[in-house]
Image 1 (spheres, rainbow, N blue to C red):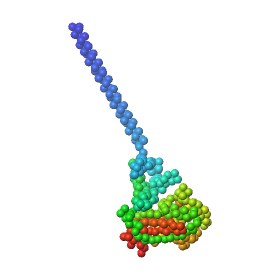
Image 2: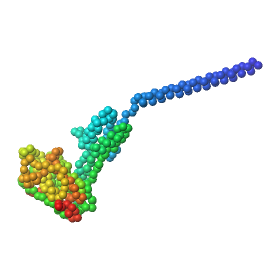
Image 3: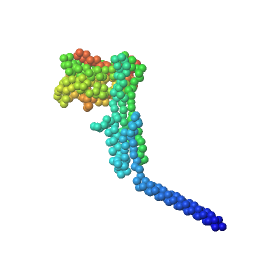
Image 4: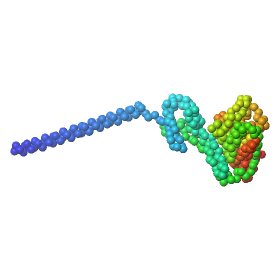
Length: 326
């Protein structure tokens, strides 16, 4: 009987112990749930007190790389919208046109040309970053943040490959200037610049820039010291004489319908073209630029001789009428 009673007591104790263990487990679980709930509440409270600030990321559409990040809050988006807008305009201007330490996205077109074997030597298309459009895109994204693709517009030269063999067929304009054959430095500069513009294809809508096509006139590119006109004085300078090339070109293209974008006169009269018929250039500042506003292409041919420079404008026979001034 005593053994039976001890067994029963053992069972009761065991059951009691199990019950204690279950209660402790439940208490621990409840405590964990309470702790997790409190942490969640703290997290929500923290996020409410410190919301994530919107960030705008500028993306290059060609490389798909991030160019720059913008924090609208730091740019006074909320407190001074007008100041924010002006800062965006300045940023867009710097990205498009560049700064002293950064190259801008805007790039003038380097026109294609024909090689000696008639092959096309590719230049570079025109690239324009639309500043106003970029500002508007950033403004739209400033409230919520996100990525903004930069509005880059790329324009290729306006001609058809099948027209190229025909562009030398007809001379529709020509002009010749003369120089002293004994002035070797000056003549070399004329020769180099004439070679640079020879066989350049000017397509429909294309912009021609003398400085862009010819490039820097320095000793590294073979240019030599020669007299040039600066501020009504004749001085020696590297590349002196190339204005005869640009002026000869002006008098040739002036015989066809084009639109002048930039042209400057010398501060003194020059002897190789009539008064007022010159086009002075200086790399990095003064340029001679025009646009082919016709819907047909033409070719520039430059012939350098012992004492003369002739520049011709040629095109296909089927385009002559469209390139003739009325």
